[in-house]
Length: 128
Image 1 (cartoon, rainbow, N blue to C red):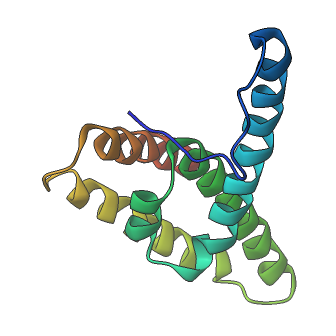
Image 2: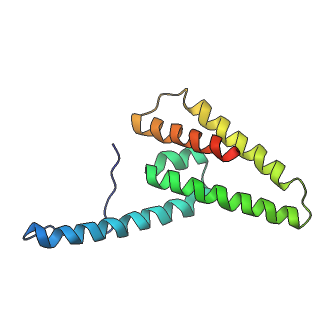
Image 3: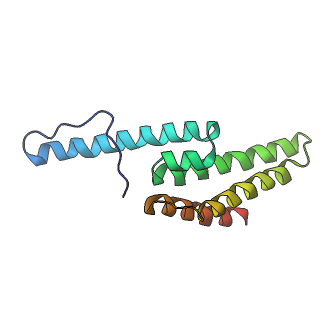
């Protein structure tokens, strides 16, 4: 199972009716920050390492966000005359997909395997 640390920790003193709302607010703030950090680090790390170091929500959302940016960037490059930009992007995305498939052959934790398998499904459907 996955977990994350609140940034900063939330106090749980007093009646639950009061502090539970603060916990929920802090959870949202923390998850937003974790997501931002994960998205920021995506292009700076090897993808498999990035998947390993981030929680599933960040991996799913971040990889979709970067895929969208890469496709949009590919179309912009085509408009500017780089006629093989989308073909080159497809080659890179296929390589990433193959790396994920090879990763499934390794010994992975249940959580890591779920993240990799989910990304395989997402990447296959993104090729369509």
